[in-house]
Structure formats: structure tokens, C-alpha cells
Image 1: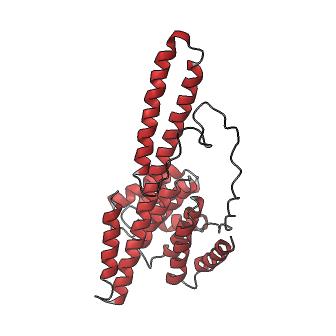
Image 2 (image 1 turned 90 degrees about the vertical axis):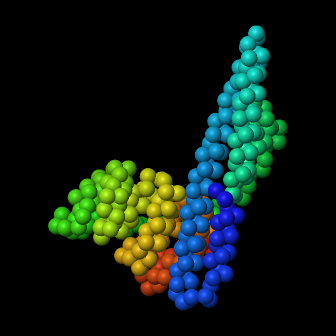
Amino acid sequence: MNWSVGAAALAFSFALAGCGPQSSDLQQLNQNEFTLRGMIASDRQQIDSLQQQIKRQNDEITELKHGASGAGGDASSLADKVAKLETEVSALQAGMAATPGAVPPPVGDATGAPPGTVASNPPAPGPAAPAMPTETPPTWPSELDQELADAATSSEPGSKIYRQGLEAMKAHKYPLAVTYFTKLQHSYPKSALSEPAEYFAANALYETGEFDKAILQFNDLVMRFPKGKYASAALLREAQAFLKLNDRIDARLTLQKLVADHGGTPEATAANTMMKDLASD
């Protein structure tokens, strides 16, 4: 991802401030901010994937080195495999170094020692992780029955698919729910049910622990329907997803946007409480 291009685009949007109506400028800046957050979430997924791959490669190197010590005539072959794997690890770390925000781990275990060795002086434990703010329960479970009743008599395009998605949510079959809601959005993008479908799909992703994907969905929902029925709930849930990823900065930014754009809502009240908890850490 070319961050220099993204940064230049954002800088250009700031330069345009004052050239048009203030509300239009603010909307454009908000869109730029949420677009960048989506880019950050996507990069974080790539970084996590690379880190897991490096760990698997290091584990395999360790196993091969242990095997080489008692392999006799096969030691040369095992050594070649170790050398090849170490080259692959170096290439993966080089790829991580090129990814924005990535900090490549050293070759070997978490202490920095080469694979198969034991560090004589293990590192001192770091400071304890800050406490997570109390999570406000989501509102979507209490809305399911009413949404199901409304969908049963709805004449909106895709109402049958929407009802199937809601039934899957109620049965805690979250991946299936995402499938139905995504199908509705692709088949009937202009249906009035597209907004709630995206909201429930994002919550389904959250429930399965796919927080990066949930963030992108909540973010897209707020950009498409900034004053919609689910905008404040989506922003609160997005902030909670950022906290699940230990991204307290983006969580705070999202909460601030929620309070600024949707003051007086129950979600804004919860956001203020969460920001106080974050400030006390």
C-alpha cells in the first residue's frame, strides 16, 4: 500500500478546506479520516499474518536443528533445509519492514536468541497492559424480534434474504448470517434493508472475533448513512472493536466522533464513560 500517495491525498484535502461550504469540507475530512482507518486495519491484518508465518517458520527451524544433532549422515541435508528456512524468514521480515507500522521480530524466539537455544537471562516482564474499559452490551440482540416481525411483512427488495440473515443471527450462526446479509447488499444495493443488513453483518463479524473486518463494515456503514438509524451504535461498536485490537488511539478518535456527531444518544453517554476510563489508564 502506497502510504505516501495516501498521505498526499489527505494533505490535498486539508488544503482545500475553506474553498467550499464548511459542512462539505467537514464531511470530506471525516471521510478521509475513516478511509485511513480502514487502510490501517487492512495493514494490521497483513502484519499479523506475516508474524504468524514467521513464527511457524522459526518453530520448524528449531525442530530441524534438534533433528540434525542426531541425524548422522543426514545432517548435511537437514542443515540445507535449515539454511533455506532461515532465508525464507529473512525474506518475510524484509516484507514486514516494508509494511507501514510493522516492526519485524528478531529471528529466533521472543528473547532474541537463535532458534534451538535457551537465553541465559530472560527479559524482565514489561509493564502490565492497561485495563480495558467496561464494554457496553450491544443493542442488536434486543432488536432482532422487531426486525424479524417487520421483515415478515416488508415489501422491500431482498426482505426474504434479510429475514434469513436475522434468523441466523438469532441462532448464533454468525458466519451464515454474514453470508445472507452480504448477498442482500450485493443483489439489492438500493434496498432500504441494505443499511440494517450491513449493521447486523458487522455485528456478526464482531461476534466471531473478526474485529478488523467488523471495523471496516461499521466504518462503511457510518460513511454511507452518517445520520442513519444505526450510525451511533455502529460508532460505539467500532470503538469497542478497536479496543479488542488494543488500538486505544483509534478507539478514542471514534468515541470523540460519536460524541460530536450524536450527542445526547445513549451511545454518546457510553462513549463519554469509555473515554474517562481510557484517560485514567
